[in-house]
Image 1 (cartoon, rainbow, N blue to C red):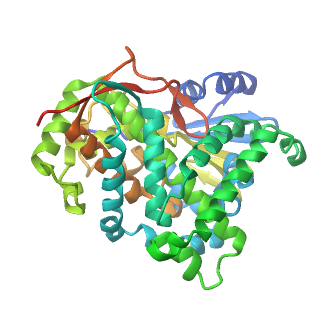
Image 2 (image 1 turned 45 degrees about the vertical axis):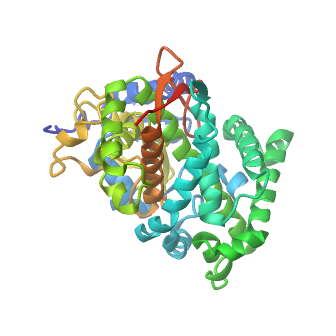
Amino acid sequence: MQTNLVLENPAVSQKPSFSFIWNILRSPLHALTDLAHEQGDIAHIKLRKRDLFLFSHPEFIEEVLVKQQGNFIKGPSLQRARIILGEGLLTSEGEEHLAQRRTLQPAFHRHRMEEYLPVMNENTLAHISTWQNGARVDMSADMMRLTLNIALWSFFGSAPEGTVERVSESMGTLMKLFPLTQLPLPDATRMLFPKFKQASTDLRQVAESLLKNPQAEDAKRALIHILKENSNGQFTDEQIHAHTLTFLLAGHETTALLLAWCWDMLAHHPQVMASLQDEVDVVLGDRFPTAEDIQNLPYTRMVVKETLRMRPPAWAMGREAVQDCEIGGQHIPAGSTVLVSQWVTHHDSRFYDDPHQFRPGRWYEIDQASFPRYAFFPFGGGSRVCIGEHFAMTEAIAILAMIARRWNISSAQSALARPNPSVTLRPDKNVNLIVTKRVV
């Protein structure tokens, strides 16, 4: 397709802040989409004494994430995530972040996928072997358990008994209560939420047990090895705990959501599911997928990409301007909040025909030479692009292929789950499917 690169309404007007605040609290996805439609590629809201800008065009998104990234730090929400994650890779800034990333990057190099894939395959097969023919399966919960097990075995060498249950319970509590930490309350008041405090404590205890687990020492897994042996004193004990928590939580939650959305889409688009199964039948047969196979499953990859386009687990990203700057001719004062939204840009009809239609084949049609780089940015961009991007894509493709090869799925619900934006983009209800064994 030809992408229209004409920028919409670069002259910025202001929207009444009260109306926007009401809309963003009531329906964030609609509020940001409406704001972009009303004001164009640069939208401006005045919130008390703070300016808020929403940039929706790929050119401006690239300015924020790449070209002027040194002038932007994480937004207020992720800064508050320190109360859970501490000073880890997700929350650190500047030179400290770059140094941490350089040290941790070897655990996520592409060549590591050959090491991780057997773990992904074995855990997936063990997990789906518990399914009963014709049973109803909650894919939201099932994918969360599966990807958590994979993260534990891949990064830490084992999954001590009870770890999956402890992390799942604590994560559920934190996801419900974390929005409350966005309220203008002092830290002491936040700590009055006993469930929040207990869930945070439980996760830290899990991190401690993983670091002390003798099985992890024997396994010499890449991440645990780097944290404990190769940091050369770079990381404090607190930072090691923070990295452990970050990779434990971020290493499974967003991929689990991606997979739940994939299954929801596939269950409601049987022709797409049939095309995916045709591909994995030919490429894999009865084998486990190898690293080479992952590259030879283009349609399966497109199913993942199309789901990331329509239901991006990271649906918006906030940054704060450190110094005055200019983007698209618009002056951005220091201290301003800048938003870029995967949800808004991924559903822009200038870059995608029928953007609300689930059509994996569109990725065959898109001319990559003219397609704007930041019209699709599910993993962010620049020096802060998700360090686990290759791991997540490999994991999602492998799990889809292994399950689709062995099981047929149909939805137990008449309609697609609706997106519920919180810290991540979650289904508003469980993704319930009926699974039946394939005869192949």
